Amino acid sequence: MAEAKMRNLTYRQKAIELARRHWEKQKHKAIHEREPFYGLQIEPSASFYDEAGGRKPGDRNLVGFGFDLHPWVSFIAGGLLIVFIALTLLFQEQSQMFFSNTLSFIGDTFGWLYIFSANIFIIFLVILAFSKYGKIRIGGPDAVPEFSTFAWFAMLLSAGMGIGLMFWSVAEPMFHYGSPSPMFDISGNTPAAAQAAMGVTYYHWGIHPWAVYALVSLSLAFFAYNRGLPLTIRSIFYPLLGDKIYGFWGNLIDILSVLATLFGLATSLGLGVQQVAAGLNFLFGWPTDTWFQVVLIAVITSFATMSVVAGLDKGVKNLSTLNMYLAAAFMVFLLLVGPTVYILSAFTQNLGFYFQNLIQMSFWVETFRGVGEEGSNWQNAWTIFYWGWWISWSPFVGMFIARVSKGRTLREFVLSVMIIPSLLSFLWMSTFGSSALWLQTTGTADIATAVGNDVATALFVMLENFPFTIVTSLIGIFLVVVFFVTSSDSGSLVVDHLTSGGKLDSPLPQRVFWAVMEGVCAGVLLVGGGLVALQSASIATGLPFVIVLLIMCYSLYKALGEEFYHATILEAMTPDEPQRYEIPMETLPNRAE
Image (cartoon, rainbow, N blue to C red; front, side):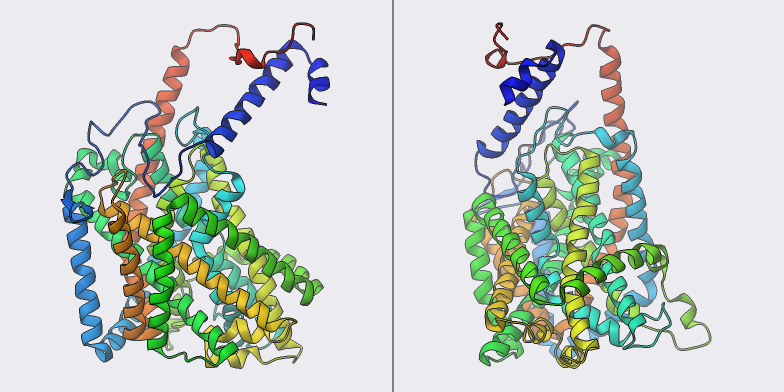
């Protein structure tokens, strides 16, 4: 068929078709014939000129005892972490009060900054994607992807918010159904409250968080693959700081990145283990107290450590792909056995409600509810927590997405990272959230009471009302565990990379150390204050990083302008001549054709 098609083409069309086939072969080779990845280590490259200035990642590290550490980043970040752990364990009662006050103070004082900044990130990225810079390719004009599109989506979705989708897909819509956002000024437990509940849930899990991830990952990928700098957060600020990124300011940026990553991950791991404990209690009557959750963290962290040892290809990639297949089957099963028409109708209507109210939801900060009356703190526990969570996760998720995104154009990257995972999240939330609302509104089950008693049980109480409860509950637990593992080992690879100064190949004991420390942080936060501690840790570490991300926008824009300028200059220097096609000799058509 292909050869018959070739015979009917003109010579120019044949040349183009052969060039296209050659490009497809190169893509296949880049994906299937490359060396396995064991970590986030890359060989930095430059498309037009190299800004590394002869510096090598980790060239001033301290090496010994199975470690290869950047001294300032590792010891300061590690020291602050140890002090936090010690104080939280020694003063548990005071810690709970401290975490609660921190959550309120940051939300009341800086909530507007979180809200405003998240919108800036979206506007900035959309402008970039549809500007003249949209054709810039990560890795240079000749770069090709190193992962298939499906594997790429699977990894970024698993790393991005896997545990959160499992934990909040039932609980959040039910919370908002009973206590709607004050923005809508409607009563709870009404049809209007159900619609608003799904709209707000879409808002929290849609374009805004993925814009944060897209900004950081695009910046990291560009400066590593196009400017020859190490895959670390400090590299993004080279247009502003120059060689100072290797000094105090660069160290400070990477220290903030390490702390934000660790506490952002600890939040997700803490939520995940609460849900695992609730599922085991639901099925087998096992305990759900804090110390049992800490034991679960230790057990699951050991699995994450084994995945870290296996490496990026054999560990994270395979687990992420498995999780995507299993999660998709889980969702399709509920879609088929649940209220199918209701779910699909809700998905359609929820999209319309989301886009219709997106601007108002995106800029609402409860300002006027504090005038002449007691102000509301609804947003602190929801939107501000989520935005702080996403921002604190951004160094981790951003670096991971950057590592696996070589060969994508800027436009393809931005639109894919912002839109595809958002739509998948919407479909997931509609399937599980709408099923729970349907059970509640039809009087089939009282999901709201279960959520109020223990939010972690929400998913399992809902599954009790559909066929094969034990099987689906076990699958739910397994998915949370695997999401836990992929998040933990991805995060440990990132923290290890940051604390080694972007080293191309850091020692295995070092990667294991950081995987264990993530589990320790999650356990300490659970002991020191439970869900409130997890929430306050996210928004507190995310606060200074908001400023970093705002400056990052300008730095990336400046660098993209330079890249485009050099590409334009090189193109202008090329003499006018007939268009030529470079075709491998072995693929040329037979003259008889």
